[in-house]
Image 1 (cartoon, rainbow, N blue to C red):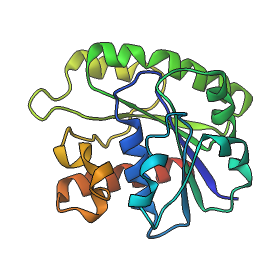
Image 2 (image 1 turned 90 degrees about the vertical axis):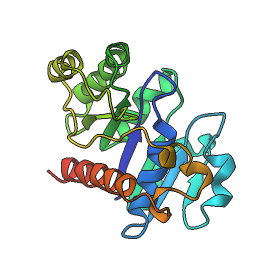
Image 3 (image 1 turned 45 degrees about the vertical axis):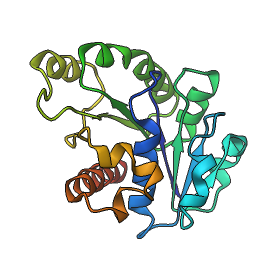
Amino acid sequence: MGKIITVAHQKGGVGKSTLALNMALCFQDQLKVALVDSDLQGSIYHVREDFPGLNVYSADKISEIPQMDYDLVIVDTPPYLSNKLTDLFLISDFVLVPTKAGFFDVMAVRSTLALIKFAQAKKPSLKAGIALNMVKHRSGVTKDVKDLLANIGTPLLQTMIHDRVSITRSAITAGIMTGSDQKAKEEITSLAEEVVDYISA
């Protein structure tokens, strides 16, 4: 049976869809990968034809995820908490929680983490990690934010994804992996490898 990674955060604008898409594209050369866009707005699903090598499914396929014949299924989730989120966590192997590096962004992550903890109580094998996403180059990550993340109870992944135009535009430029921004490729690849290491541990 393949592995399932769900990308989730109750707050909109933290780059979930872009991250889910680029991670799927990063894995597709080595694995049989599917991407499920569980947002009813279907932002990724509507541009699926721009990614002919990637199998992209809409929200109505959520119930079929455990039966999908793939090495890896990545699930993008909508920017609000719904009763389906816990159900998604319970079929997942890993939940990736992207967040911006601001104080209020990190505070907002707590309700998503509470749902993950609830799911982990039912499914102890479920793993999760927080990824700093859209990090500004000059401002970086403040000590207050680092302290908050260190005490939040869910591991902070080492890889940070910086705020790059190439990443922001990647959904309309066939993804980071085919582009010329080497640093963006390295960050996405590093994050993907780090998640795999967590799942495999």
